[in-house]
Image (cartoon, rainbow, N blue to C red):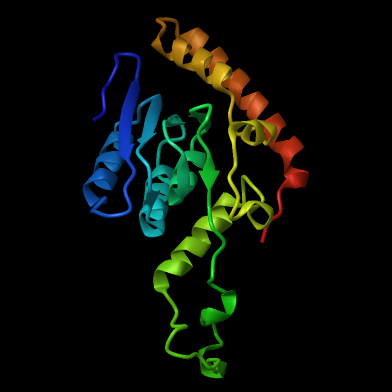
Length: 217
């Protein structure tokens, strides 16, 4: 459920499960974002993994939000695969201290996709009955490409990632987020703006420092 405060903060809960239909939750997220809240706090709870297609649809909704809306993601559980991407999409992130991130390597290859303007030249390689292409794996490969913008997928895929490493990459800053949320609930617009500006400046500095460590595909 989501709650609204007079100061413009809304809460949105995502229960992670590998099965079921997320269509309504995505629609609810779009409706929440359409109200242009100052802050949308996404609570991620439950074990399992959000399907790659669903994670990409959550991302598409978040990318269409107002520039004035700040996203805060809070992970109450360890995250896998598409759930990791949803958490990373926050402008600010918090995670339970003993929780972990995990994403497996992909079996999908760029050679499995027909390239633009080269359809007639395409000669499919031999595949036996056990090596059919899974379209869902292509979505998962896209999820990994997006995760790679924050963490080096090649080095970290298949390994558990804890809070200390996330701090090293500048992805978690619990104390600063707490101060920001406190400012949002305050009655002083000036205090809110100062908090947001300071957080924005620090975020840019962290990204610049972390960029040499990130390996992009």
